[in-house]
Image 1 (cartoon, rainbow, N blue to C red):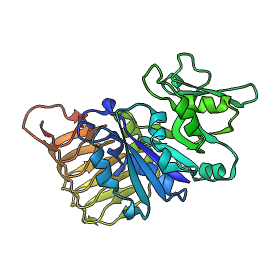
Image 2 (tube, rainbow, N blue to C red; image 1 turned 90 degrees about the horizontal axis):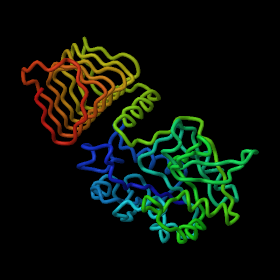
Image 3 (spheres, rainbow, N blue to C red; image 1 turned 90 degrees about the vertical axis):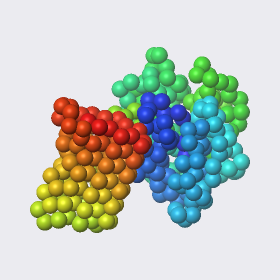
Image 4 (cartoon, rainbow, N blue to C red; image 1 turned 60 degrees about the horizontal axis):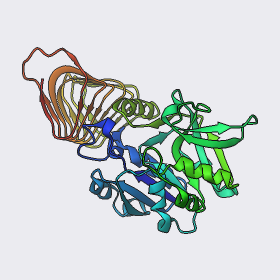
Length: 357
C-alpha cells in the first residue's frame, strides 16, 4: 500500500499566513498540519508517499520533507500547479501507484486516533474504495453521502444545496487502482475541478464495491484561523507532560505542559497547561502562558500574557498586553510603543512582521 498527501490549494481563507507558505505547513502544537497526515500514513506501514504540490511555495514542502530518508521512507513529489480538483491530483499519481492499493490524505485534515484500523480493514477486504464519513452541522459545505433505507451507501454529491444526509466525506480515501479508470472519464464540474465524489459515484454505478465508516472521534478541516486554533486545542488536550528544558525556582508550571530542550522558564514566569513550549525558547520573569497555547522554537517572550494562541518559531514578544486567540507567524516581533492600546488583543500575523503596539 502507498500513500498520497495532497499539499495544494491557495489557502485564501488563511491569509496572511499563506502569503509565504502553504497552509499545510502551518504548525499546530508545534508540528506542521500535514505532518499529522504523514505520521498517520507511516503508522499504516506505508513506505512510499507522494506529495502532490500546488503553486503556493512548493519548494518549502520539498525542503521540509526531503526524500523521506529522515523518516526511513521514500518520498517523491508530483506538481499539480493550479488547484484543479482532488480527482485531478490523484490522477497525476497513476505511475507512482502502479498496481498497489493506496490512501489519499488531504494535508490540511486532522483525525483523532489515526487511520490504522481502517487501513488494515481495507487491506483485508475486497472493496474497490473505502471512504470515511463524519457527521457535520453544515453538510452543504462538503461532499455528502446518501443512503438507502437500510443504511447502504448509494451515492455521493459535492456541496449540495439540499444535502441528502448530514454525513460528509472527510479528506481521507482508500482506493484500488480501478479508481483511475473512473477519473479518466470525468469532466470538470461547475467549480472547474475534477471531483473525487463524482469518480466514486461512477465506481458505485459501475458496480464497484465502496465501503464506508463513520468516524466517531473528532475530525477537522483546518481551512480557517478559527479551525487552526480549535485543532490546536484538540491536540493539546490529548498531550501529556514532558519537561526537557529548565524551570527555575520560583517559576510555575501547572497542568500538562511540554517544554523542549534548551528552553528556560525564568523565575516568576507562569505556564498553565495544556500548553507546549518548543526548544531554545525563553519565557522571562512575569510572563504568563495560559491554556491551549503553542509556542515554537527560538522564541523570546519578555513581557505579556498569552492564551489560546499559536506563536511560531523565532518570534519576539515584548509588550505588556494580553494576546489571546491569535496566530503569530515566524520571525515576527511585537513591541510596546508606549501607546494606549487596549490590554486584550487578538492578532493574525504572517511571517517577518514588526508590530508596535
